[in-house]
Length: 86
Image (cartoon, rainbow, N blue to C red; front, side):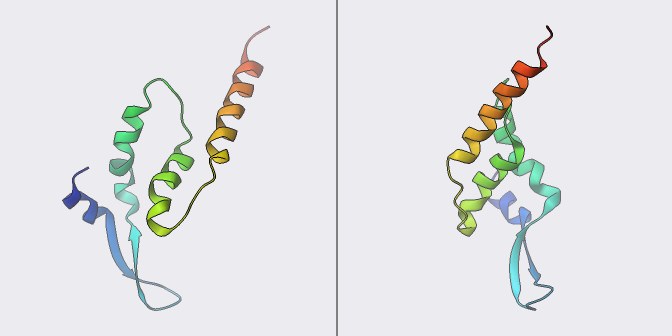
């Protein structure tokens, strides 16, 4: 995604409760923002939400512990083992 395209992804609105301007990620452009990450995953499955949060979160000060990604990897391993036929 090019820098100029990023600004069509970030839009300014008035906060409905605080009545102050704030910036939000336009939901219609989320796929364009995530497309490079989805391509990079290859055959490896990833948790879309955790990937999105770890990509966008640092911009607003959100820091996810590494354990979030690790827990998902371990859960995938367990589900794969349980799904195998006998």
